[in-house]
Length: 550
Image (cartoon, rainbow, N blue to C red; front, side):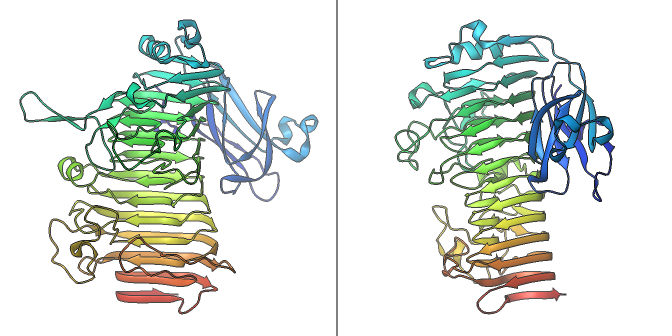
C-alpha cells in the first residue's frame, strides 16, 4: 500500500553534517516501489540556496536546484542510500566524508508489471489507445504496476483501480482526445431505487451537474499512485474545449485528473498541461498527496485552476509548480446543496515548497465553501506574478456551515503580486451575486444563510513590487471576521504600480499603492508590519473593534 511519509511510523534515518554554519537536512517525503521524493532542506523556498549533486547508492543521479525533487528508475524491495554533495566539489571530489546529508530507505514491494505496449497500445499519437491502457489497469493485480513507456498515447477517459500504480515513463505523453462525444457524460445525481438516497457522479463549480469524466478518473478507489517523468496533455484550446467555455455542451468540461470519494491517492513527478478545465480536482476524498508536479496552462485559458481540493480531508501539496490561467490552488467544499446536505468540510490541508505563477490567486479559499474550510497551512512558498496571494471569497447565502477558520500563511515570498492579501465577504460571481442581499453593507440579521470567518495568521512574509493594495480585508457587518494576525510582514510597491480593483465586489474602487484596508473585523493584530511606498495612510480601518499594533 502506497503511503505518504507522514503516515509511516519509521521511514528515515537522517545523517546531518555541517558543511558550513548551517546544517542541511535530507527528508524523505514519499516512496513507491520504483521512485521516491525527497526534500533538500537548506533554507531555500522552492529553489535550494545552491545546486547539489545527488547520488544514489554511490552513483551520481543528477544535479538538482529545487527543494523538493524526485528520483525514478528504482527497483522494488531494495535498500537505497541517497547522498547530497555540494556542486562546487565536482564529482571527482565526492566521498562519504564530504557528504553533507544522506537518507536511507527501502522501496516498496511490487508483484508484477504490465506494459501497455504488450497489450496492444501503439503510442503513435494517432491510434486510440484507450482500451489497451484501460485493459492493463483493469487486469493489473494489487501491489503491481502499469507501465506506460515512451510514446504518445491518444485516449479519452482512463479509470483507476484500487491497489494499482501507474508509471508514466520519461517521454510518455497521455494525449486527451478533443472530441467531446467520445467521453462519458456523468450525471450530477442519480436517485436510489427506494428514492431515499442518491449517487453523485458529476459536479461543476460546487453543484451536482453533468460533467464529462476526467482524462484520468478515480471513483471510490484507494491506494493508488500515478507517478513518473511523463506528461498528461489535455490538448485543450479555443478551437475545442475552451470555445464558448461558459456554455454547457452535452456536459461540463472534464478535468485532467478527477478523484471522487478516493482514499490514499498520490501523484508524483508528472507534468500536467492544457487542461479543458481544472487540472486536478480531488472531490470528497481523503489522505491525498501531490509531490513535485508541474502544472502548466496558458495565462488566457479559462477556468484552468491548478488544483481544487473540494470537501477533502488530509491533503499534502509539496514541491508543485503552477503556471496557469486561473487560481493556482482553490480550496472548496460545495456551493449550497452539497455543502448543506453532506456537510463535509475541506480541512487539514498543507501546502509547502510550491511555486505559484501567473494565476489569479496563488491560494484561494472559496467561493464554493458551504461546508466550511478549516486548518489550512501554506508555508515556504514563492508567489510570482499572481493577482492575489491569499484570496478568500465568500458571501451571504453560503450558510452557517460555511466557516473559514485557522488559515495560516508563513514564510512566504511574493514578487509582483497585485494585492497580497484579500478577504472578500461580498464576492459577486454568482447569478445572484450583485443583488442587494449579497452586496449591501448594511447590517443584516444573522441566520442560516450567514457565513463566518474565524482566525487567519500571516507570519514572516515579504511581498515586493506589489501594485493595487497591501491588503483588503472586508468582513460582513453582522458577522465580523474574528481575528487577523500579522507578524513580521513587509510589503512594498512597484515604482510604476498598476491600477485595479483589490476585490471582486460591488463598490470596490480601482486603486494603486493603497495600504492595509480592514473593515468589519473584531481584532486586527499587526506586529512588526511594514508597508513601504503606499499613497495615503498605511493602515485604513472601518468598524474594527480592537487594533493591536507593535
